[in-house]
Length: 95
Image (cartoon, rainbow, N blue to C red; front, top):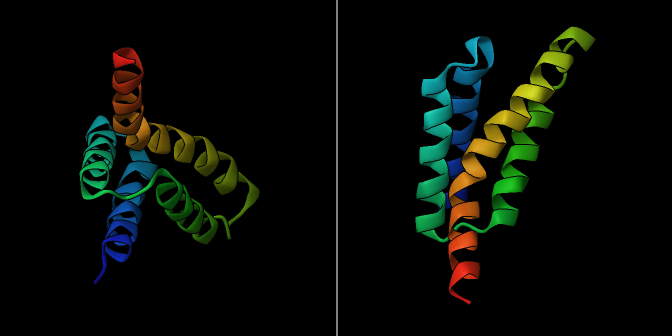
């Protein structure tokens, strides 16, 4: 299994764990996935594409489910992208 397929699988599992309770432990997993992705050289565009794929798969529900899922998806994605943001800021501070 390639890196993107593994990340997609792991992202889906972690996000599905986050959705019911919005627990901090699940957000910590998102952050960990972000660090692993960054270290593995996964591009930010690939991460965003994976997010879109997983979210699209989940948005086949009712309006109530969608209204709960979209904000949760944003919070989860934000946590996953935090390591990318930190690296970028660190690079900008050096320049």
